Image (tube, rainbow, N blue to C red; front, side, top):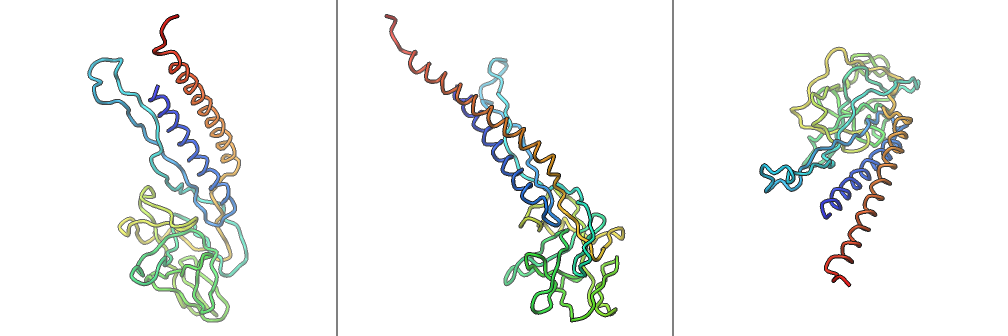
Length: 251
């Protein structure tokens, strides 16, 4: 009986965690460059000790939440006409600086190219993180007409002033999110992007969240959560009956 409470509780918590992930994804359906969060589950075994060869004592299996990972499907690219909007085609990421001081070498990666210039002319993300060039230097642009080539060269008044750093992530299962659109991973998991990765000015990549599929998943998980609550209620009723019955002397 206690095991039933435990497994039902784990299943209910797992469903709640998944609902939180789905809600977060839906909240970012219109966020530029947002990459879908997914939840992975693993199988756990209960009562392993003492099972032996007795089939009646074989361990019970149940699912539990393991970790979250990033879905790398690409979003739809749309035209904006903004000179500081950049979209990547191919499996590439822009590199940004994520911290100062003792951790000044820490960087993040993003496909959200909705950049702007701060008061000092530094090219920054929507969250004001400096964008880095291919030498991992902060990009500062002078005043003038800004244009960009597909290989990442940034020009001001037709004069090249910087080249956007473009990188590929080798294994996305080793990635974590610093924020909604900024990814972090070990430097050994990153390499310079191949030539098939190109930059397109005046365009942005949208979120890869499919709102319809997310709503379907939310309804399915809501039903699962309701089912878990009913099971827990049944266990609670049975527990109460056992407590009232066991030890009672026959009248």
